[in-house]
Length: 137
Figure: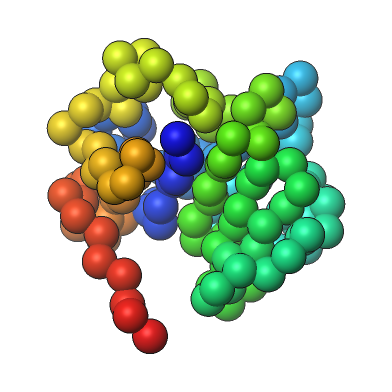
């Protein structure tokens, strides 16, 4: 199961702050990758990107992907290879039991697509989205 934190800018169940949209290196609480960080600062934590993905998504050798727009991190993805290396600032990790996950991020806010749980938050309207639409370009 992949874990995605999508774009957004309190409490995780009632709303998000930029601090909520971060991952932390296990064993090094100062090694943080956060929504809005520049690519240079992200790579101080993750190292140089291993390969380029589509539309600005960069993949790193530690199971983390970061999507950049205008040189700022706007989405963070953790895959199986991140387990044991990174957790979210709220304590989520890849392959976490769904019940434990929903104690942190309410089940009603989850969007499940092809085995991945997604949480998308509209920072302007201050509400979770029920679906995420991707451009086909």
